[in-house]
Amino acid sequence: MGEFLTREFGDRYTPVGFDAARGRFRAVRSGKGGDTGSEQFAFGPAPDGSVTAAFDRVGDPPWLFDIASAATDPRLRDWVDQQQRIRCVGTVYDPDTPTRHHLQTPLTAFDGLVFLDRSTPSRPVADPDG
Image 1: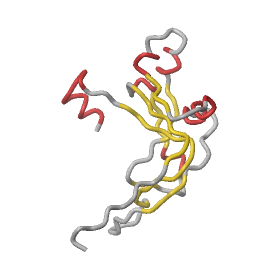
Image 2: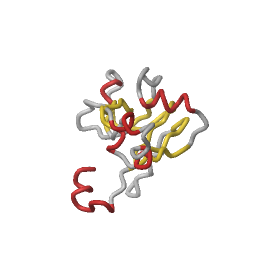
Image 3: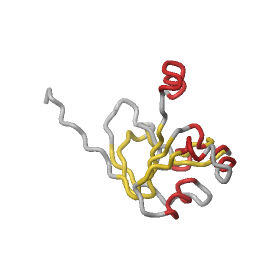
């Protein structure tokens, strides 16, 4: 999606990532076939060496890490531009392989990253047709 939005909007597109140290989230279990119902899952501990673990050590969330500015800071430039491991959970989740849901990317793939101490799952909206 980000590549499409970048092509469509160029510099007007501002990609912002989200990560949380712990908590719960809602997704569809991988391999459920035709059943598209979502369920709640919990984040496991952040893997050692991951951006999630590093940001958790900073403390005092929520906050926004301004990656675009950090990329111009000589103290941070190399760190934000190297491959990093960051939690990346989409609409489908496989609880048997949680490390599969980590993105390996330089942080410069985003302009900013919102970091939360704890996430809470979304709540399903009632079906208006009953």
